[in-house]
Length: 52
Image 1: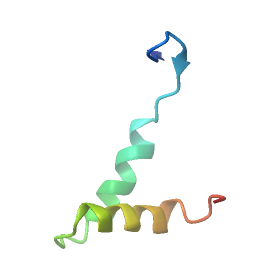
Image 2: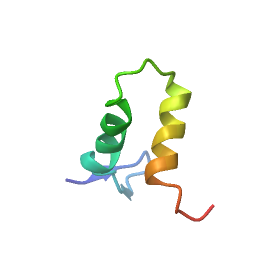
Image 3: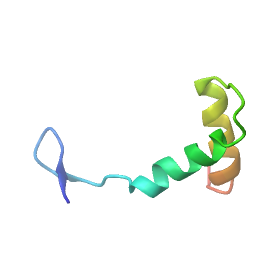
Image 4: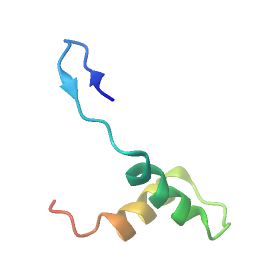
């Protein structure tokens, strides 16, 4: 499935599992957390080894 940008060029979409599996995993604890904290948890667990 292709998506097109505003100027008609192809843009790459993130796969569903790359987006939602880390979020669901971070929410498994059933704790109430803010959106910021959710982002921090996902980055810490799944993206901490990416170059900055």
